[in-house]
Image (cartoon, rainbow, N blue to C red):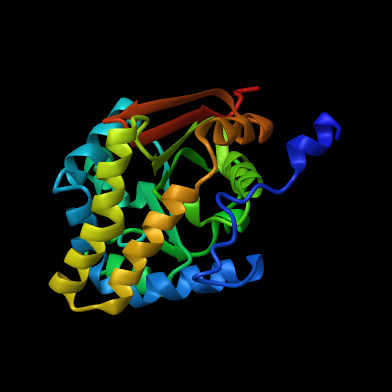
Length: 254
């Protein structure tokens, strides 16, 4: 197989998960319905998953990754707007932040606390003009796209020359002991806590799906390779706490 074919082949973030949907064509409908049905509980679930540290971390990582006043920011897969809220606080200009998500339910929740443009759409076909944004962030949604290459090329298109991309994701810890603890919490404890605290079977299902997508996600080296093949430069990966991944990349300035 030639390098050209390798660099353009479709890359799903994880295999088809047949306990949830039967084929690749079922991935997007399943994920959209799942997030729609769990939207009202999403902030609570995220707070449990991050043990309450999420708000601090989101602001910190955006600052560390170069978000500054005067920039135009796109929050891809904004969900209920957690990253967008952090960006709005940092930029102090609500109109400089745009949130995008495929789930109508998530956007409905986001509109309760955010007075920014919120757009329904998918990362594989961004409804924005070329060279529009200075900074793009995709928070914990890489596992839910259909094709990493298509998604990253669209991100590159809407970034201004010299603009930056930040992809936040969760991966399994490197140590066997860490993996056992991680698996116990995300596969068993968190879904149970979610069901008890929310009374929602859909929120519980979302947490179970989260675990399976994390466990089955393509390796970080492949994500880095696809970013490079999509035209980004300065691609790097930072790891916090053994499981919080920060992929950073730049659109060439030329």
